[in-house]
Length: 501
Image (cartoon, rainbow, N blue to C red; front, side, top):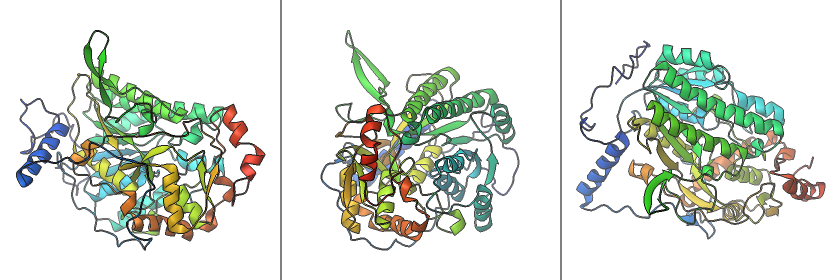
């Protein structure tokens, strides 16, 4: 472990990786992830005499989601964790790429709070997109400089630093920074993250591909050029799998198949993107496979569900640390958007039949999953399947059931509207998430989250004067047919409680 009281360049991870008593001997062909899972299994067997894994994976919610308790005030903040998670147990220098964003900011604070040295790298493109869309975060987010200074003033951890850098453009500067800082780990959030925005115009489609694929490839190429042994953790999306086309449980990245002639193989799960944004994540996955095979990079790809919630215990410590809250039709995630609409008295807009089944995860669980991924890097190897892939989800639910849950809690009307997306009106979604569960994740479920739902609603109510009702309904249409159906003046005017444009 590093002495976090000193700010000196860190020795190359290639020359400073002492064996830990909990690490396997070098002769065992186990990755750190496999070894950690083995420890968990043995511990469970020792305590209970037998191991029960419970359900095969994540269940699909077909009936309306039920909340166990009535809407109540948020629970008191929990004291933050004071040490790094299980796994290799080392404090690390971590680059959080895209650390000013909705997921990146709370993750950066979380990693700092558990003892890692964090450097945020961000080009502030999400804030610039706010200006382009004419729609700001519902919460008044401070500048990155103020955010970082505030955290450093109230935290007793190694100070977070912020660097304004465009990964897709400033390659040489980024490589020089890698060589000077010598990070152990990079957590990659630095991609345009909204499917509707990626479909909005030819310009946003091209930007999404150029920014996302360009940034990811520059990161991979930069790691190789630096010559350092850096673990990259990438935030992907469940959307790479597509929705409802597998015909069964979606495994974690790889699927066993039988080829003609009876040849059995394990292959990367076929991709079936539903937007330009999702397509960029599929391209990322192919790049990861190549660089893991060709350059023995250590890569972890997290296929995450839809994130809900706003604050964590850490971002709630000070008003200047508050996380962003997107509510507009282009960037607002579905559950957050529903809670905002309810707080503002706007009917909940459900696209089509609402039969789309999606995976969900709370923002605090995103932070925990990143912590676990950072602590359990895979071993570099040129074999197929060297990229560690985990499904980062808590549960699945149909959109109309989520809307019914919010309507029951708040009394707000649900309104079905024309779907601007080109997607199946109904689909099932069965997802495996065993890896994170075996590493100790206890996910937050919708049916037991009355306090957290109330917290989001309270934030929406507090800042509802910042809501621009004309931005609630998406104006991004997947194709001409969807534009004609959902983008007509009649269709937009039929949406209650909003101002049609």
